[in-house]
Image 1 (cartoon, one colour):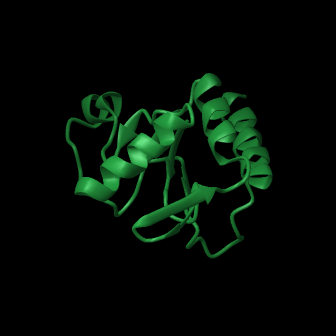
Image 2 (tube, rainbow, N blue to C red):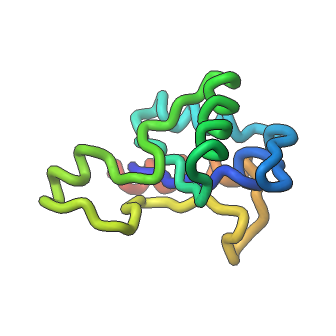
Length: 119
């Protein structure tokens, strides 16, 4: 499964561009997603120095996304193109209309979808 995840106020509490603290459980959940074989794309409006800071912040906490603001090579080969829109099975963003960021609930949701898609 491909998971696209925002950074600001989704993985980390921020007052753009300052990064304050991790949202509880975010990095651990992202690592578990990768360890389960999911592709995790960092999907953020950050760019340049601000993006570099976010990537370093994640690395300092033991997480490296599979892709940053781009589709995976596997997707590009499969589709025969690299569209502007990031393709994912699940999008995690603090601007989601359905619920607030709660990484325990998010992880339960992803794990539930993974079981259904593997049947």
